[in-house]
Image (cartoon, rainbow, N blue to C red; front, side, top):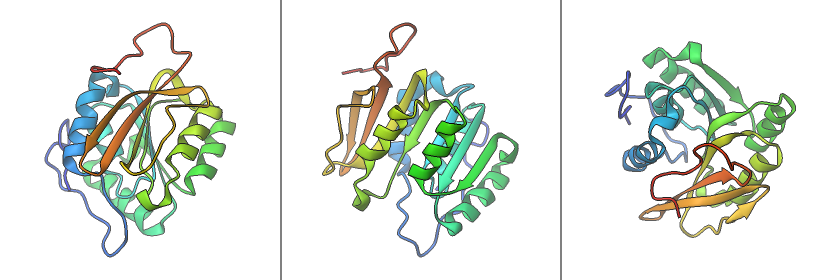
Length: 196
């Protein structure tokens, strides 16, 4: 597992050994950031179910201003911290050991807003719809922000929920990534290349 582009390009990241963590494949990550393009620059990024932290670290490498990482596994938290140290991004990152839904509620109470939210729960949990619904209900996505849900192609996810709607979906074998925008994003650039 490596950083694909940006200031930490080519750096190898530590992996979680012996756990059922499924890191986002490099080809999915490359496509994700190709679609997001310059929106990553100076963005606030939330990496939910962060695992090794590779997606949030990729965002920081490509110019995100800051990133928050959430995972409920102590082993994952240790690997995220180690990987942030490997690439020297500790000062631009916050790491939280917490359940994703609980973390969203805490961030909502703090009135946090993120430009990009990446959600990658274990496929077997099938909680993508519930989590994306909480993101919308709690108002965590900035007005022109993008929420991205990685999920199994066998999981049915909502087209519209809690003020968010799918604008694009990509498939990579059994993996899907669905891009959500706020329905009230009206002004400004709320589109993505290849928008549905």
